[in-house]
Length: 329
Image (cartoon, rainbow, N blue to C red; front, side, top):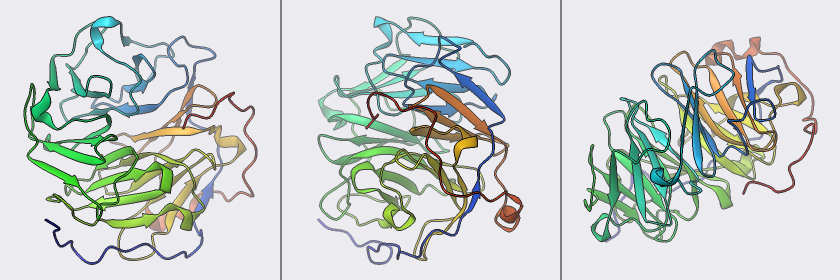
């Protein structure tokens, strides 16, 4: 049954790009060319101790705020990690990793290291999982899973495991769900989901369910064509990566008004190269996974809206130092 949404389904008008560009070298770079821990990273996440996690095809490496080498690596047959497209950390640093081949979500304990099995699994016919490729966890532990095969987002109670049914399912023609590449949950419980192939950001309310229409932000209005990663910080800023334009956009909000980004990180000095994932820590520092140059680049805290003019301006985007042999998406 179709449900009414909070306002009509709408697209943001094309108002052009007025963001202040930030073309500056990252404060820190960890590169796979110099470290064995990073190769074609799909995403990144930051825990409560400001350790950052790097997601790859068959492993996850963890770096401390200071170490150039990984302090932990989750890898091996027991882990079940098999080419995930996304992952997430909850408030207690439990790690959630989708496994589309098994129609499962793997949950690893904090400090998991080596060839270790997940502490718990969400798997079975009752879960409604069908090609899970992206996950997000709300501040209160509610788990969201985007299912590519089912074109759905299934929602689970905190601590869900085994063959546990979802508490809600968002699916249907009105939802706009097709190929969800990244998801994030805001402090108010709103869900932000990226439709990679249409360059749209879908925003669902905290209680969204069934065939409900989201608010839609069309990334093409900002010149974006290959959206991938998304994160929401504690102040409600929304950070989005675009592989095609080698950029990270930071929005103060997404909604009914035209969503102008307050900051755009891009340019030759930024060392962004096919950015696939983004995360932000408690101090608002920005972490970006770069598939193209096998690196994680870290940028100092992004400014408040009224301070964005302090960022240096820059000209057109420069080409990256090299291009990968294959595009990530």
